[in-house]
Length: 520
Figure 1 (cartoon, rainbow, N blue to C red):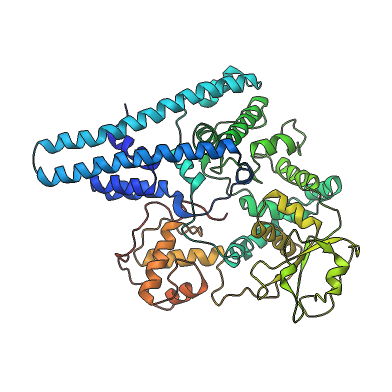
Figure 2 (cartoon, rainbow, N blue to C red):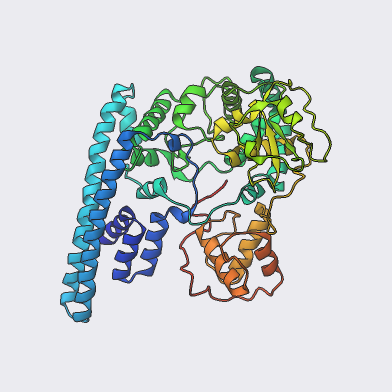
């Protein structure tokens, strides 16, 4: 049997952030408290969940209500035990009876953990039956699930609400930074023959394929850090959307069965996306192609397979060869911005008649596009920021991951890979976002001032944000919102790097600064 401390940690996670705080403070163990909060809060960062975000159904809603009711009961029980322990410890400090009180408090938590583990084992038996019925061999199922344990942290990520929001100019500053542009141009050169072949076969230009690759995994550097089988099995057995995740789990086992991917060492996002261009297993099964002719569709180890599959996906999503995704425009004075929105499509001629201009203020022209081509106006930060007129190919990019900021990142990165100059209009902020090189510099400055935020990796997680917030408060910068921008970077550059303890008003988070990755 696992030690009680292990059961406690798992139980904290299961019960959620507030219950974790209550329980851990009873034990007075700051490290365990911080660990529990980090897991329960999911790092406080937004995590992309393609497909899963659109998979809700009535069964999921009912399951969510039932799970919430069960959790509330567990929280109440835990708080009652915590209160009794607090009063007892006050009366019995130094008493031999204190050990008994510890055991009494640990017992219900251990029982809860054992119950959850038993339920997971029962779920595995159900999954085995479904997998074998779907064509997965008993040997494959046994090999993939041998020694498998649930990962409670992914259940918290499923319901995590971001503690900090990310403005679009911060998001794009990371995903379309000079490093990603330079790396992408190198990939265009290194894989030119392959990309030219795919352009002929699927009609997708090389820059767009490489831009998807760059945004999804930084050209194969970041596949995700969670064991894929463990994450999907956990989500298939607990939490919301079990039906959706169970279908993805079955799709993954079928891929393993047919030899497309190997289960050993397979890593991905918490929600199940994996490989160079981060396909969900069901998308992999439908769309993936063999790009290198070896008889397998391996989007993890084969760059040709991954890029060919990405081109195939965009083709299936409606990409039109030779047409632009869109372009930056300027609004004329007095323009009615209420007509904007991705789904508010009008013929191109209508937008031209309304007086849209190119970024230089000249009459807008769109070579290669018919006057009746459907187009929509995007104003992602309102009329005071950059404006974009987008066409069918933007919708194909949007289909890859249904988020405007994501689709714009791919579109704008592809423009830069083609040699374009970037945006002309500025985002409506006096504190621009930071690229990854600047983010690493900011993290080094924070580390030099005594903040235990992990490595300077350029990924801004909760620990880094709390350190930034503490420095903003110390320096009198407003708002003290924990945001990594030019203002805090310049302020820290300007003062000596004297080591000092973190502000006592901030609870530091254990682990790496990138414990939860907001953007790749």
